[in-house]
Length: 592
Image (tube, rainbow, N blue to C red; front, side):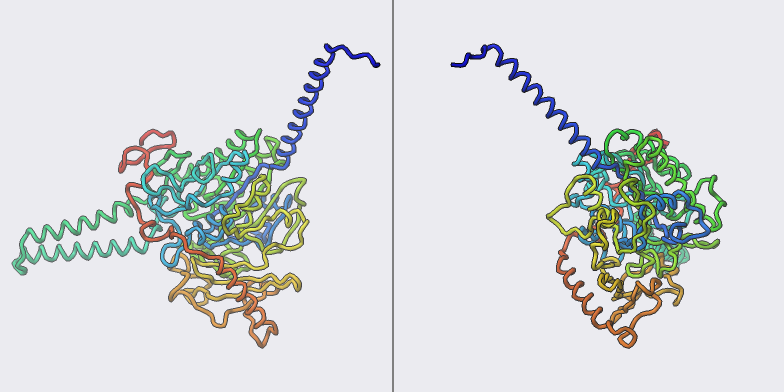
């Protein structure tokens, strides 16, 4: 019979085994964390405002200097058919943030207002919408937004911040809750609802003139009316004037403000210092979060009018104030990219540059063009069908993961950034709603030959203006136009005197049969095809029509965020530093 081992030896062996097992588990866990961090790159998204695709050297411009953005394209992947989901700021950015057409969240309009008009309106990105920031925040990312928001602020009270970036997944915000407008520049021409403003002023002047006429008639004995009636009428005119001037008379103070998180820190903002503040904030955010995965969305105020440009760049370009502003924007992008390199983050950061839509053709003053150039593409900002309104830069860089210098001609969308970023961050796209975007990772890395988009639908407001079909087998790219804007003056290519072209009504032409273009041969959309010139005309029109019908079956009604009740200025919703209506403060938060 074999001798028994001493019982006292069992405990040390068991303890050693457990300690060894614990050590192995810790090593495995550490390896998993390192692997997770390797698969979770930092994500830097940079979006310009109103930039034309033809304004960049890497997209064919030979007279504007954009070396930093051009170098970004050389080191990464450049998309030539990258498309905004809407041709105006608010709906385009809503689609970008959520991966969904803006009308799915009510962030588009039937008629009238097509973008948010006031910080003190109650419309905005609904709280039940999921942004890529919210998903990455759940994955452990630091999530920051520096710059323009333009997705609303409050719903029912001044401080509920239901539409605020911090209620949509961002844990840090510094910037404008609204957007730049010419009203932000002291002495600048009116832009916010300028037509309504001029009508209200005219009505006030006519009413005041009427009351004055009655008063003179009463004084001279020509009219038999009591002075009580004259004073009552004058009081009504005064109340009418106050009711609209309280908002329109102080647009700069109400809309042109800077916030840090939930606090208003500059009201009204000093435009000349804003670019420097934004740059410092972006660089500081990168430095603060360099030891953890971060998402930073830099939403530039450049190159939206009024084109505020620092002295360093004024008069330096060949294209006036707009060109100066573009070149300053490129410098800002270069400084942000430099911050990545300084902190050793370049190779660990997925970087993206784009614009929210095409250049603003109607932006002009007495000295010339103040809007961008859309290259060979027809149309511009506000036009949901023509390429110039929706074709935007698309540049991606991730050293070691994406091939440098690659150019992709497949149709892609700003809505694709949502699933792309979610995938890179280790999250999952929501399954309880329609997501219109598709991840670009396979296309960017070269594991997929074609875009996941066979069809794309181009809206102006809630009106479908055009649709495209990428016929992969033949390589042809068909574009069908159901409506197009009527240019004014005729033949000019824009709607001068209107701000932007309308989406419906007398300002558009409805095409029956639709216009058909082959973008693979006619990028400028200059030669519409006909049954006599294109044998596949009827086949293409029919196939795209079937896709449109299928797409429309995915639509469902939602509360409109751009209704008049949501758009109008409400004093109880106005963000304010100090005591309303005496809202005024400098950057340090001290009342002015």
